[in-house]
Length: 162
Image (cartoon, rainbow, N blue to C red; front, side, top):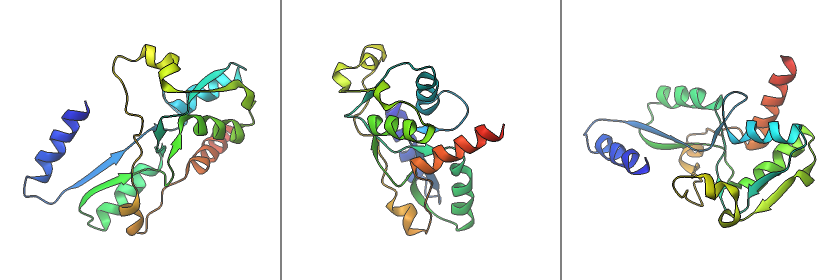
């Protein structure tokens, strides 16, 4: 999968055309299957979860992506942009933040190394330890996406309004 994405980007970059490539990482929203919804469901039921200490992610609030893309297109931005939160967090830090925002018991979150996790046994392929994105280019355009806490608070507010 990663190899195919890289090859595709290479074809686009070498096409001679102006291009805008947007990379995202660790997408989350109030809908669908993602780490945030999985953790909320488990913690709400009082179930213990494993949270990996040595995997670093850049959580990306889905609702921000189309707004940022629209802004970049209107600015006639060119090149590769990383669309993500301005912070890099371990999966464990993400779990603790979810517990803080939603008022769940943090003692249900068990910190583990990836090598010791149940997840490693379930995955068909090894995952990189660090999939964080560098958002400096985005910041240089004056664009800052929601940090993880802000995104979670928007989810919490949206769920309350329903």
